[in-house]
Image: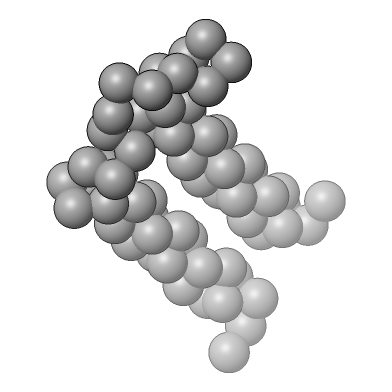
Length: 67
């Protein structure tokens, strides 16, 4: 299996992980009225998951380009 195919499979895995982490059953866990550092826990969870997914995709794209 060549490098681009493996990275492509990883991109599909990242997408599936994002769909799972931002779907209802998982997303209902941090859904509370509590604040962490003055930010609602649900907003903080969504932002952190989104940031990590974007970072993983960025790393994968740079590996495809060979950087």
